[in-house]
Image 1 (cartoon, rainbow, N blue to C red):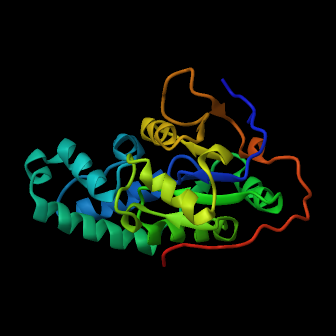
Image 2: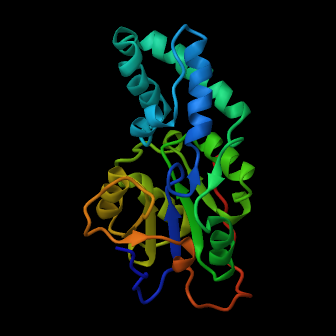
Length: 235
């Protein structure tokens, strides 16, 4: 069920990116299709890509290949070549088809105006995550972006999220983490933060509180409040 945030104070909100804040799946599928077709494999669509999302782009390529060419899925050199081509294609067009979920485009700036720190914790590479946020107009609303390539222990290790909190000068008890898949649930629990699961996310335990609108995270605050900007986007 959808529940309001019931905390005495919310100083920070950290979000997963793909499938949580931004619907990127069509751009991912388009870039991967180009890389697959270049080596004689068939196109893939959103339905093929969705189950493989959330663990980084190398795992994405390997997982999709298992359904298309199991032999090639065990060939590290083949995976590396397809992955490099996919990454180049995706970097060239990171958000041509992508859209921000729900009210994210207005809610994230509202969080910042309310003095709430905002970060992104993603298994996408940091540079591509920044490119997506820039393309959808949310780069100025997010202070810290840490992809899996910028930390020694990426998700599902909760230390990835804790590193984002450290860079935002946040404590777990003051933070809400928002995600869309079971990995995010485990990360939130492991980090000791309050977790909210987007209503459009993957199925998880019904007891996990849902979030239908990012605006529900915005606390009552002086709209003129201006949080200190300590950006860390690992460019």
